[in-house]
Image (cartoon, rainbow, N blue to C red; front, side, top):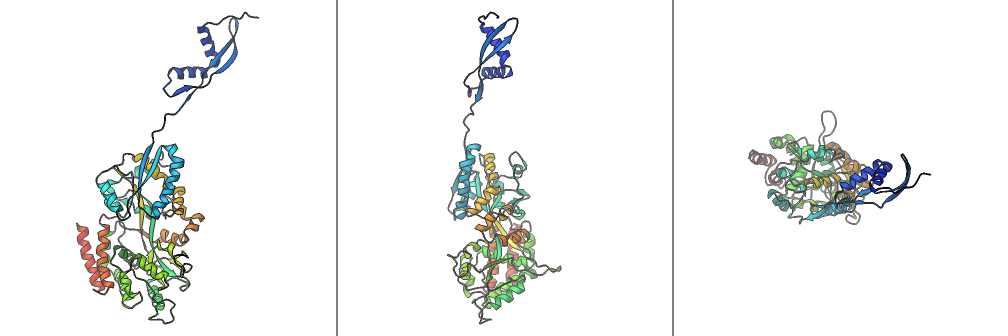
Length: 477
């Protein structure tokens, strides 16, 4: 047996290095170059026989190293929404982000709400001032006016390391509503689209053309048909309010006119005196004049029109899709909740035999503040909010995202029964409303003139010509 000798410190280290190999060498180098956060794991003792000119029993202890990550610096992204069902919905989605994804990403979301009436003025003043107070802003109609103060998103979405998802699930027209000069400045979260709401227990097949709509409306007006179960055949939202001009615009577009569509504002003005525009306006003038619509409907807007339908007073009307939920609620609409049908807005027959239907859409959505100090972090949150999972949750909790993948899900249909009826309208007939900076002024001018016509103050031709002249002046500026 070879004689066992004491091993010098130098021999011990050399032998240990040879025994443990690369791991020990790496550990040693790691130890020597150890940054503050590196710590040693408990020692591991190995006994090996090393063969040289003489046999020695060497016991070596190697030290593995591990890395304890430095604490992640948390960034808070301030997300603005407006109060109501939309903020109730997004708060639940944000809660999920903060619980499961904030620890991983280091990005916490904080919801910031302003009063609903003050919302537009508040976000506008913040953005125009170049304030970083908000990172994500919730807006509608305003993207054309606010685009210089919003972050363009195209490059972010084109970077797969930042965005490994897809925007193809959104209806293209919904994304168009957040484009200015070809650049994308926001993502849609909620859609408002115009539809024909009708009594399906009384009207088995909804009218497809405007002429059919007029005929059906007369048939369900007691003045013309004493046996009619409804007093009026149609409800005109006739108050001098810009949103009512938008409702009329969908009828005018379905008649073959040119609406104030994205990029077609000048053509819309020039076509305001077209036969199609005159036809659509004459229908509303006649409905009120002949008593087919309630006589006080010249003061109606969204709630009054809904109330008349809920009371069983009328057979049909054009309305925002948002009304469908309350109309089909047995507690809110006990007289009609199970009798509510939804169809495309009646139009005109085309030379190929098909019928033209158009529905104006506008969208609520969110954008990144160009002055934000956390734009990359804000985009990571924004990217999550474009996923099917996030938008399905948003719908379940009260929102209404224009997303095809969500609309196709049975879970979504269980929450919003109108989705199957809205899908073909969104796919085939919806158009994006203008994002012109003067969008509010455009519709204020339009409704001033057309409401004067259906109130009997001026004629159809004069109303449309007056609107045209005033809008020409506005757009030239």
